[in-house]
Image (cartoon, rainbow, N blue to C red; front, side, top):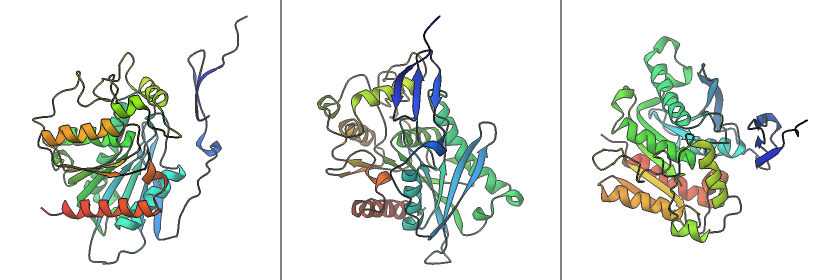
Length: 327
């Protein structure tokens, strides 16, 4: 008799890969989180099904009252991180982050889930992120059947995509795919993208990767595992999904993009790779700005959105939205 399947890879006990190739993923209700939800009641929220075929949901957040009732709320999509293999809109860090974005920015926040690898490898997550925005478009076009939260007081002409880590990677690919103003999504108009330390990779290590800047929950082995499990079978870290400026990636020089803001921790393992991404887009004439918060590590805003540094990040987002809200 053969031996029973055993765990060969474990990611935080949430995702386990067994010796026979099967995958065990713990139910979300059984995950124990050390983080508490910070909900002061200033934001109302609810879940909606946006993709019946894949049973994908999103969470809407709307402030109870706006400072100026005559001003319509901008719309902010928040794409969660997790290396494409874990994460959800329901996790406390994501939920806290979206509560903070909704109240601090006075915005309608849309936080979609997307299919996770290795069960669903890329481009599944990219397709789902795009479909979540198309859900909003369909809700607007179907006035009689649209969600009540979207009927009044919301500005469809001021939509921003915010992505954290792997969500930042998705934001990049949406920006490239949709182009300036996102004409295919009319009457929605995307105005800009905010990338919190976007998750990119490559075969050649950067200096910060090679030196292995200390992060308690992130190292090169984990990053490599994320890519191995999420990229199409047989791909390397130079696949265009991972490395937008790699040898296999199409040139972005002639492609126009909406404005971008990159938020980065100064002690991140991926710091050099992300700064190189910003530098290359600037050299190609793209409108992109990077703000580095010294001493901070990966996920610092998502995990501490109500902190003092969280206030500073929020101000950067407010400024970005204001700058890019006018025609």
